[in-house]
Image (cartoon, rainbow, N blue to C red; front, side, top):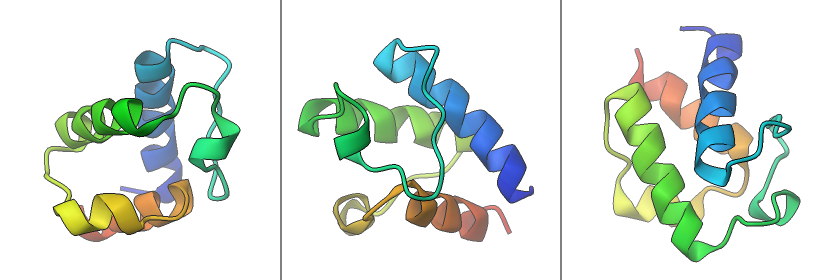
Length: 80
């Protein structure tokens, strides 16, 4: 899976979770960039990403990722 493929899937997940078709995430995207991304929606987002990509994030990983780029790095690592 390429980084581009991961972003294509992530954009669909983010748009669905936040009900906003204009969302386009990139490496630098953080919770501060998406209006409704709070701690509750973070949980919904992580669950949706886990379902989309077929793996579970370790609990410690979900709170230490600083941006979407780190999330993509981890997804790509898990997809190997």
